[in-house]
Length: 568
Image (cartoon, rainbow, N blue to C red):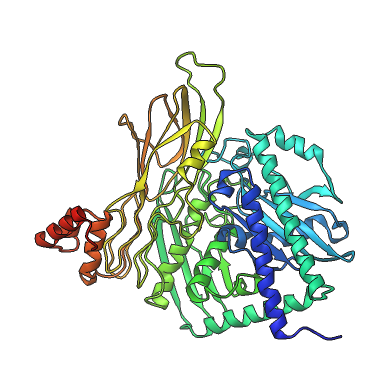
């Protein structure tokens, strides 16, 4: 038998990445939920017969794909190898064996070629509603947070389990949307399978053993080479965030060995009574991601390139919450894990990692219904509208932070038009927030303003999912803090950063999302960049003068240039 050359294997590796990217794009095009279609809150990947991830799609979030890297092994164990049959499709939303909370559905499809199992395709998508209390932090246990689907067969040898479908339909607020998303997940795996078989036929492959060994061996070696160049030492990192009703402290000790990096979260705060707890699988996903993008960003993501990044977290800490802890908003804690890791890693390798950013997504969900204080038309409808939004990312060692950009999650901000299309919600304002980026040699990314209300005849509950109200992003290497989050009603009533809150007919919720922190001393910032920021409206004249020392004459020149349209 003639084995493929290294060049041929490299072509196949690139082909696999394109296959899973097509898989992900099929999900984006066919999903019902705006969180998938517009924000890209999903993941897709291909696995060998042992459940080892070989390639992931570029489209998607690290929390999903890195958590899903462990999930397929659970599917194989739960289903049983003898019960894995051609035409099967498997499903779960188990927070501890999936991707961290009930609002993510993971689907796994075995891939057969010439009657033999050759691998698996898996995908995950965030769904808008799974029943229970809804998407929010209010629950006291996972039992309150929605319908739990254990690892099971959604379809057995091509036949869908209609009993399961009826159970799902009977327990969620928008059954058509959720069932539509499940079928979209199923279909995208099928597309991945078809493209894989096309590749195997083209290259005359009977199985994936050869290409799997090539991918994993090269990824492992390349990652270990990067780790070997680092100082073999340890450092501690720590950050405090708002929590639900009391602050939470995340602590980590990062140790670089010659063949691995270990992040130990011993000393981190314990499990919270509300649903912001993070299962280990999700904390691990973001801790690994933080280090991988810092030292080996161009090495494709797979099981071997992730394996050298090890995580330790004692059970009962908020980054290793065990069943039945409430975990609906596990992303709030999980998205702060990278900044905690970077607080330590910056002491090991200075000048490499960014300043702190907004961290967790600035999400909120609106539950709209007919107003209850007066009679209203009978044709008004109940509606669930989820919107993903971002604060600013932290400044980087050589560049400003990115405005209204999600790091570490990587999801996209939802367009106003798409949000208003799915329900009777009105986004009255959505714009960048001047002066919210922390000052420094490199400025933090800007947050944004948002104002939300409902159409005439509707009132609503808003599920707030915010942080950084009392603990804004911290600067690095002398940079300043980013601006904090604020939230209130337009009638002056203050609101909480987390939890379900009622908004009466005619009222708006006014939000200001946090900015990223600055990097380096503000005295080192190029004044040309200060003038540019002033001209673009990123900073005010007051900030230009107070924080950056721009003179009155220079400010007047910028003002004149803006008036005449002159380039700054």
